Image (cartoon, rainbow, N blue to C red; front, side, top):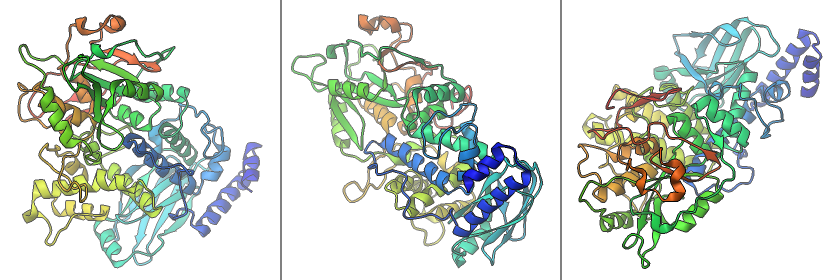
Amino acid sequence: FFRLCGAFLAIKMRLLWALLCFVAFDSISAAIHPWRISNEYSGLGGKEPSNDPAQLIADAVAQVLDWFLNHTTIQNMANHFSVAATGPRGSRKHVKQSVNPADGIPVLVGSILPDSPLQWEGACFTKKTARLNLDQSSVTVFTRDGRWSPACGEIFLLVTSHTFKIASAIYDGEMEFQFHPPFTEEQKADVQRNGVRVLNFRKSFMETIDAFKVLDKIFWGASEKDLLEFYSTNVGLDLKPRSPNTFLDVKSEDFRSGDVILTFTPDSGMSALIAWATGVPATHVALTLWDGPDGADTSTLYVVEVGLETPQRKRFTDAMQDLHNGGSVVMWARPALPAGRQFNSSAVWALFNSLEGLPYGFQTLASSSLDTTEGNLPPGLTADSFPLILAMAGMVLKATSSPYFFVIQRAFLDPMNQRFRSVYGESKLPPGWTDCTSFACVQDTASFLHTTIPALWALPEQDSWRYNFGPQRSSAPAFVCSSLGMTLLEASGLFQDFPRPVNFLEFTPKDVAQLQMYQQDPSWQPPVCSGFRDRQWCQLMGPLHVSIPGFNSIPPYAHMNERCAAVPPKYIRTPEKC
């Protein structure tokens, strides 16, 4: 039936036929409620969840994107009519990069309250009005002045603090969207306070699905051509293939304790997201550390980092081989120790040993990057829409019994609860308040405190804060790669002259790369790095030639990196000394 519809459109049959196809499909979809969250759905395709935190996050994003692709009412139609998506749903064929992936991210246009309808414009309908029917748990949408094209229709999301609904509009008139199951009394109270939020996609549904496919491909299975186009078009990075992808013939004894290893894995969804948000192809940080005198025959060189699930050590040769096998770009830089000061390896090892085995710090992954309410998000995301999109992702992952749901718990709920307790304190919180376990609780608590979720997230992460990782680690810091690297360098004595106060949990890989702490004189580099002497760092391997904007350029200052915005496409840090 759907292919016949496509055929009718392809040969430019009457518009009536096209509209009948759309109306019939939309009606069938409404009858079977394809937007309901099904416990049977799995976006993994039999794939076991990764132990790598970065890949785990990318897989979680991919699963949510796949869920939307499978549950959008016009998805099957778009698969046949789309000019940019050249294969059926789920294919990983090349998608034209003229499609802007930001168009796959919806924009918050407002809230529908019981006594306050909402009006907004879209790509296909210049006038849309939505009214809330609280007793019927439904929203009625009136569309007018549509472009009347069989290829034009719109997708929008109706979101509450507890649930959401995917809706589509393809013709002028009145449509009713029913929430199933009906609102509970608690949900009705929430809707009366906060309304039903409307997130509208910028483009027609075909263009939106194409943008979904680009995002899905970037996070899970993009080709090299797709990736290079994505980084060039959306991040402004001119990455050239490096052939052959050889590992420079450096020797272990060329390295010192405390050398910084910056990596970038271009085909990793998490690397793509970090680069898109920061504009820098340095998305992971590690240090080299000898377990005895540097370079001695009796010593072993390790790479220490926040790895698969925890702070870990790995023999240097094994770590380099793993990075090479994984297609990573690896850059090597050497911090400059102040004159007369020695690197305190014993203190670094003592600290590292106390942290080894600590779970990955998902709690600070986002909060270390979100310094402002608006200026740290990838294109398309806003301070208002991001928490709602995250909440919907959590609803999908929880309802599908996804193994990735705990990422939402740790990355969103834990940092919100930390800020409620540590910044505001029990005396200012609602009577009887306990740690939030849902988006609705976070929303209500923020409203009670007369603040917003974006403002809470922008509060600087404090090095003194501790998180509960369960019975074995009930109170511990939450480290990601960059904050662990900076904390270990702090233990070495490198930052004794660093202006205070400073919170190293606020440092991202970009911040570590741009901090003015590296040797500028290239004489430390071995001869094999002679081609990189103008960069103050040496690229050891990788399938692409890269450069790091602003490397070693920002002098340290108090409260560094606590309130920095860096908006694409130029990613300029503002304000000064942010």
